[in-house]
Image 1 (cartoon, one colour):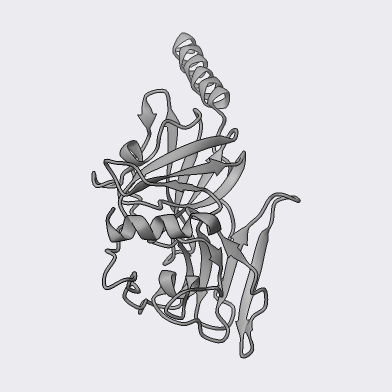
Image 2: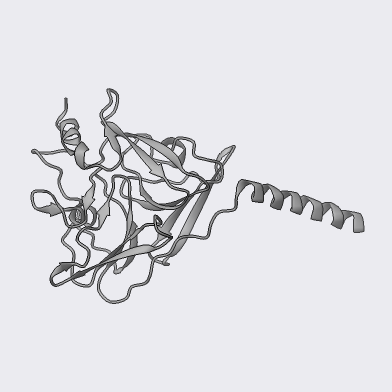
Length: 249
């Protein structure tokens, strides 16, 4: 067994979603998507480019994946799964957060290797983020789970493994929880620590991060993708309109 495979097994008890070892890959993750919006992060490197067609097992028709653009503070790209496949074959490398809007609940199976190599008995931190202040949608490149302030290893927390450094006063995290009604759960970092130190992230779950203090913005979910039947009706409506217009000529 390779060192990182052993390490994965050690962390199975704290993983919310199933993480197992297979013979051909480092492992696989079964992630349960709820109906509606889900903040998701591809937990493993599939070794084939990490695009939607290779990462996702076929989801329900009408499932949408939206990527956040921190520069414009909006969703820049959305791909919808149809019978013919994804409308846009987006790249979703580990660590990239996204919103998966599902018309019904389903379980996705994600197979691959851990992107960050296991070295000298531990996983190293990613490079510290040095970009501009703003709101970002990120997940952990390593399939860890736990509270945002939990000591994962060597004194590093889950925040450290995502951002590459310690949090700074005024920074925030938002997770999305619709178990008691749709809504974001905010966690603020103050001089005494996190306002909600028990805020948790599961393997494969992403969160919105405010980098920098002050009010950098507020996260939101994308507009719901049209249901498959709606898309079909829209197409039929367009065809009827076209035929009517031609007849009038």
